[in-house]
Image (cartoon, rainbow, N blue to C red; front, side, top):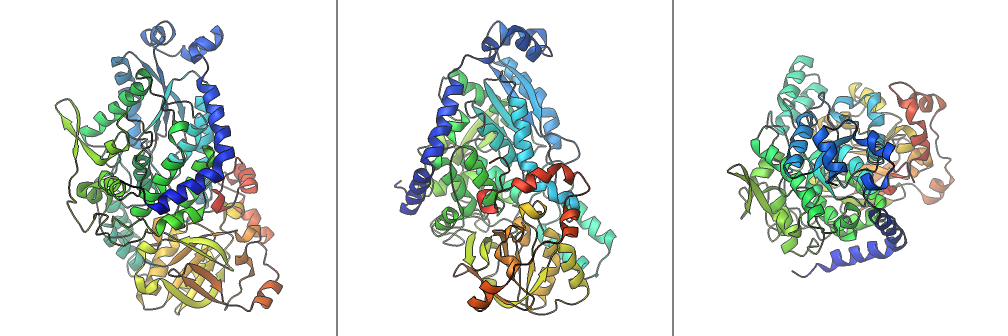
Length: 605
């Protein structure tokens, strides 16, 4: 299939823009790959330390027989549902490696925090920076430099981007990502949202709300809405970094273990087949463009407009929000999964899942097929679904959509354009997830009410001060101000106001991800207020126009007056409060060094 000209043009622009940094990166990983293997290269004391903890048979294999040694980087903890399944994975991986004459070691454990637990608390201000912390923890494990390949065990919001950034800094290693899968479906997302809105209005109490939340989040596995965690898995499939079709197989199914074992076989297949497919070579401009197309086609998380900018930079590739915006004009919306619809990811999987979407995009010329993947068969392998066959695995064609209210063909999409939109204007650059917002809410024009914290906005809502058309502006929420938390707690009150017929919107330099639901939310405003961005010039009562059709975000203020205004500054008390308690002191350097949201909020550059 001939490539769509816009995809071709965007990819070429990325390639040209990235030429100096990408060539330097490839030279570094080529030099790393050209060395002798670790057990032969290191001194005897180094080798003895590296393998002292291995069983004797494994020690003999890796040292004397020069067997492949696989690093396991694991985000396991048993507090968080998505990561609890990973507790059993290392033993499965080691067992499978031994069957094929190889060894495996847990090289590192990386932190995994849950935005669902920390939402609306000071702990949420560590969430974004946990991504770079995970990348560094990955590097600490891999820097022992005795590995021939790596398996990355992760699934949720910041964990997969962090593992990927860390892995790309060891880009000479063949690397396979290993997911854990979603929990079975519980209380529907629509019903959960309804109870949350009732709680925001005081119509139900804590007991009723906790009961609803516990029915929605109830067992091991990821949450079942299509937020950042599940978008991660879609993108891993589109980038060819998973075993094909492994994204949304539940952890309770036997198929999950077989797919984990297949990840070992896949990594060893690269090594034994002597197919040069290290992750740094695999993640190129075409691979990044494929991830962007898959995100847009599924109405995925807006967080990836930050994370994948950072991921690309880790591979020497430079992308920006204009690239997403240009692709969004031509990539159709092929799935409706909550918050873009009522279905959850289990329904998405049943209807055809990632393989269906990838096939439709490939056949429409909206993904690059001529890319390396961890599988010898390339990206077409990712258009099939796995199933158990005897004691092993097989793959079959997905065929037509099994539910066209959940996934549709590219010729009959839910929308001819993608789910994300870039907004620009005198208030800066930001993004909005238009796929989740009713068409009659794509344009909002109303007076602004300025808040310096989400708590202040919630207090105003409870006091009845927002019962009108209003654009709520919550500033000092960017990376440098307080680590750029997600502001999910603001969704229920805004939804209540919208349900009463008021025309409302949120504008913020913080994050909102998929939880904005049906309320227009212009998020990630860049540059942020704390860096002198234009949100600092806004005043209460200024009329703000958010136009998701024209792609603009404007304060309708006379230009001369606007330019003459002295920007507000974050108070010393608030800045101090943002940096104290719950470990936030340890992240002061990250706040100081963080780049803008559009630059990936990177802290290492």
